Length: 194
Image (cartoon, rainbow, N blue to C red; front, side, top):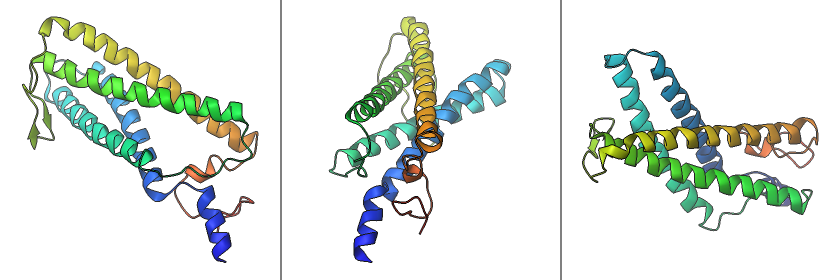
């Protein structure tokens, strides 16, 4: 029984990794959607400003999640075994993950710089005030906004490819790649849940 539990554990990501993965995904999707929703709202209205404030606060929260996720990843936590995956597929998956981390880091830095360049209130849900921590020239705020938007689209494109690859593994290759990232009960190597 202990051997079977060890085998199941190796085939699944740990709970912390799963939680951080799905929190990152939810954060990215919310931030992308909210930035496009407020474009439909009239400038200067409380609803638009409120959505922007929530967007900023969730961006700060995503920053913390990404830092914790990187610390957890590099703390020696091992991914589940992928014996059936080819070296080329492992390289491609690793490259996509590395690109996502780099783009997320760039997006976070651009978001902070853009907000400081705006010279407007910059708080975390009204609790922590980051306004004026750095003096960024307002003359570059439009450039920062353009880059921030471009990186957002690049992240969404990679997330879409990542999701398609997971679905291809599940429905075409019929392996356990998607199941081992899903929250819920553990499953055995033959695809059955415990």
